[in-house]
Image: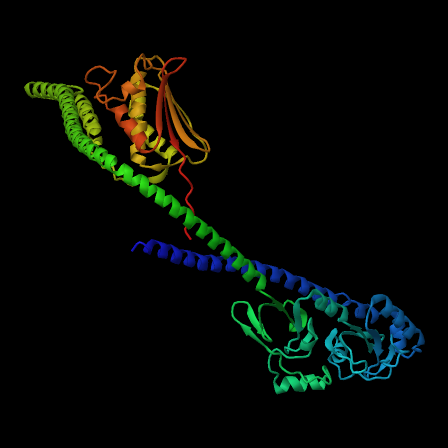
Length: 574
């Protein structure tokens, strides 16, 4: 059993080494893949550049006056010399002009044993494509020179139509030599899978896939690879960017971003990734072994020290547990007392508020009801209604309804859904409610609203109640003024929407907004209200995330300002 921790440590180290090797190998392999992808892109660019470097030359030559004149019957001596100079300066394999029957009549190699002059190339696809109006392009082994090359051809623009075909031959020997000298494995295959160029000469003119009978017949008819057996290459493509070529397994990347459906294949060794992974794994094993030795030494020291401390710590632990038990019991007792005290305090507060409300309702409703009873008795004894009797009764009933309306606020459900509305509409509705009071007082109300909507999100009826309460308070404050005036302003900014109500009444005096917001606190004489208007309004504003402020105006009167945040824009549903 004593050896079990040591064995487990060895197993853990081995498992960690395997994990580290796999993780590090995946990382270094991805680096090799990235490097191979970069090399493949470089080779693809070099092939594309080599193909396109002279793609315009046949188009220019087909419209050259010397070429046109020779194609239409002029002697070929001058054009042969001209082609020879162009070929040497441009580094081309050959430039030659063919008549409409495909026989070469002028060529840059006119004075060599392998001259194209007099040879017929009517069987070549590039000649046939040029006569049909397209630029002919074709890779093949030359039937005259026996050297491979890339042929580009264009029809010569005669006065009455094509008078011949001019072609160039591009040799890729320099490009292939650079691949071989780089020490890397690269091959270029055509659309049939025949290897055209490769860093290994043994791969050239081998096929990546078996050729069908039709493919072989087409290749033979075009004399594309004369004298070549076109055997299959000893290779096999594998999953996840791997391939086996010959006896070796290699990283394999391909690209077909080349003309004619050609494919460029790049093979890279993964030995460096494996070597680096083994090195990292060895370092991890060494570090783990060193850590294991250090841990064992420290563990032996800790065990010895722990044995010496165990007895004293055990005694201290027992004492600490006893003290902790006492403290826990004391804390639980204190928490129970606190909860009981809080419950009693909440109950007392509710009872006090209920008592105040009951007393205020009794006091406020007692006088209007008694007055109404007296008027009814007087009307009964007189036998007829006194003048203004109905008006007085109506006023008393209105006051009673105002009191009960305020009391109904506290029974209102808080689950009312908020909706977007225009604050200007709520202000107009509140002004319409106090219109009789304004007419009775002869007050002047100045209104300043923006032309664009001032949209809020909330309960329009409750915001109307806030506006109505503030308007009625302001009208009460200007009752004794010679020229009662109110100023209502609605403003909107990027962050908030606000309305401000200013009057020229007696002002707030020494009272603060906090004091006036307390329930049942009012500056009116008895019978003129319960002092719940500002308390209700403040609660409504807070429910809507707004703020209310009040101050005495410099020129006299009071200013009440209510600000609401602008609702965020809703994203359109997808």
